[in-house]
Image 1: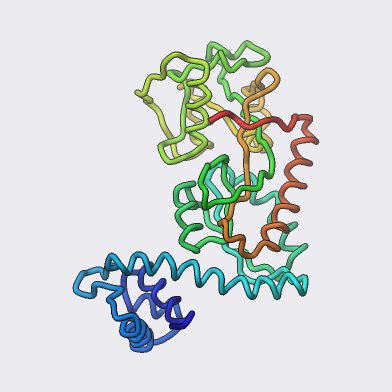
Image 2 (image 1 turned 180 degrees about the vertical axis):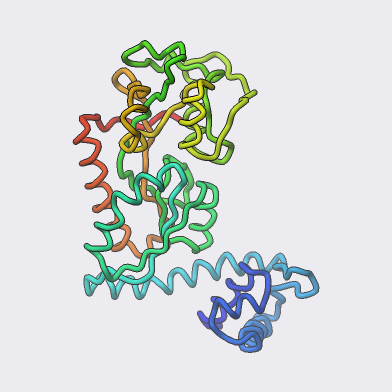
Length: 312
């Protein structure tokens, strides 16, 4: 049994196809198939059911893949030990970011990080929290930036900052005349929300649940982007809540629609998350240092307090 054979098994399990797995591993399909067959012969079991289309794992194969992933990850740790000993921060690093954080945070830190750590090759994807957690566990992401807490024993979290919520209220809305907003003023019935799958939507709903006896589940207007919510609100279709960093780029006219919460305002915790195996920690720590410093500076400059996260 070799690490290479286990790596090939993981590739086939992921792609459910020997040809695609071979392409990912940069070997010929016969070479990959032969190595997996040798492993099956050695173990005297069948890892894959080749009669199924697409190929499926057998029951014992599922258990082997779980263990193979642990072994392959641990093998990577040897290179990590060497890199840390040499003080080397570089190589490929796959980072996921949720949609309500990506547009505002990425432009703030990317140029600085690249300049400070030119040997790191970042591969960045915009993904939902559910997709991120799945990919981290499967070894397809090294880390991610998401709203926390996630309360998953396989995922570790390093808080970067606490981002306040800001109300966006159009002129014809019942709350427009108030200088500041209390959480008790919120009503879910006239709130524009992101569509299902966004953790920011869940945070808004949770906020309303905290202060209301019931929540009407019949949301008439939902959108996939915060920018669309702002446009809908401008049309007089309701109010919405924005993450604080989104408000920094709003035009001067629309800034009149921003209403801040009474102290302490509700906020979300934004963290750098990664697998409990703690691979590539030197890059994770470098990301944390750059992002936390830049964002905390931006929030402090705007005279907004760093506060506790929104209750789940």
